[in-house]
Image 1 (cartoon, rainbow, N blue to C red):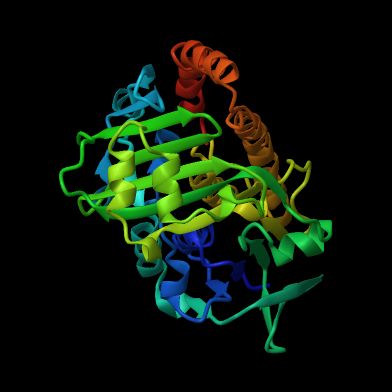
Image 2: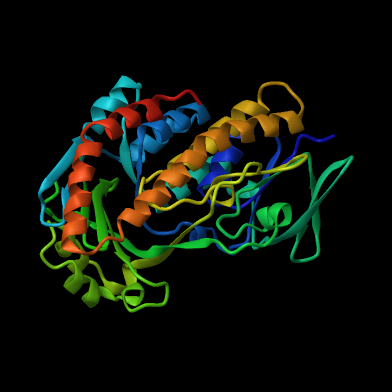
Length: 383
């Protein structure tokens, strides 16, 4: 039987997994339904926390990703008007683990992974409609009527995964109650020191700002409300009014962003499940464990998935037990993150002044002590 790996989804998880498996000498093909590679290089940015940096080390991608990012020294948690709640020394924590935390652009990371995997291994315009397993392996069915044979199939096809639907049935994801707007802009000397990340908490709203590579500033603003309510449809002017008076440089950054460059994302998750795959098929990233953005761990956990999957498939055991070992390790790791992130999403919806004040006091107590200790253990856990 061929050791060919079929990967559905050309996002960060699919490509990182492809690269890891290529280093083992496997034949890898990535199937991406977008017709143009630029269409999967979506906007935004994120914090590569210490645990994700360590996963990138295992994959052999750490130095390249570090080179395209902006080092992050500290994460400051503040109220909307700038009152300090807690500060996490993320550079210090990263150094303890032999890495550095960086802010990266999603477009830059996606482009880096496309180059690392090679465009010849990425089939664009290839939409998966299902698969079959037999004694010969896995047969992937595509929308054009063709089939592809492989030894294993990895469903890295996102929130509404076709592979997941065949494994576990069609179920709508859960709207978590908020919409996120985000963009990247040139850093024209805004009031955010190099290496700083700010997380701001307000009434029914939240915001994050940090630098990414190329001297750019990433900003994201969150508003709670019904999926089809007025806040979920806010444009630039409405955002400026809603976030007026918040700690700068939030409104300055929003004002400096052309409206057509502001991405609007409604946020969904799913409850954790106790099994991901069967036979020679498994899931990865948002297809397996979509989560809210509250812990900033979505992409980081996806990179961990890729590192652990690569390790398990490289341990010399048969494919099926290797995939089950991967799933067992990752379900144990990701399920608490999904649950904790969902809990934090609910607390962010608070709007009444007394409730927000109580939340801020609890946030300061938790982030300044127990949560920071838990974070140190979490990012240092063995993959």
